Length: 212
Image (cartoon, rainbow, N blue to C red):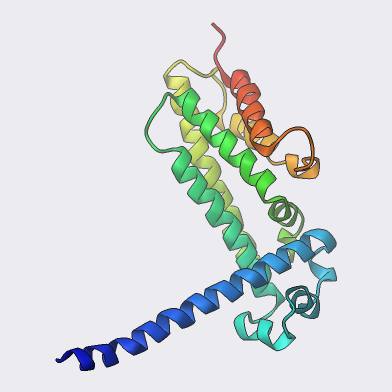
C-alpha cells in the first residue's frame, strides 16, 4: 500500500476518534450542568429544558446524547462511583503501615466529598429516583468499596495498630464522618478542603489507633 492509500485509509479512524471525543466532551458538559441543577433543586424539579438552558444548548442536543433524565442521573451516579473507586485504588497502593494507608483513604474520601459537593448532595438525596436495578448496582458498589476498607481495618487489628473491634462498624463511623462536610464546607472559609481532610484523617485515625 502506498503512502497516499495509507493516508486515505486512516481518515475514517481519525474522524471516528474526533467524533468520539466530541461526544464525550458534550456528555461531560451535560452531566456537569445537570449535577449543578439537581443538587440545587432536586431531581424532580429539574427538566431537560432546564439542563439545556444551563448549557446554552437546545433540548434536542441533550436528547441526542442522553435518552432521558433517568439516564442523566444514572450517568452521574456512575461517575461518582468510578471517581471514588479510582481514588480508593490509589490510596490502597502498597506503601506504608495500615495506619498510614487508612489515613490516605480517609483523606481521599473527605477530599472527594468536599471537592464534589454537588455529587455528595445528589448521592445522599436522589438515589431513590433511580430504577430498582440501578439502586441495586449502587448498593453493590458501595458495599464493595466499604469492604475493601474493612479489610484494611482488619489488617490493622492483626498488626496491632488498631483497637480490636468490628471492622464493619469502625468503617461505618469513619466513612460516615467523612460523608457530611458537603453540608457545611465552603471553599471561601478560612479552612481549605486540604486542611479539613488532613484534620479528619488525623482525628479519625487517632480514634482508630490502639492505645499504648
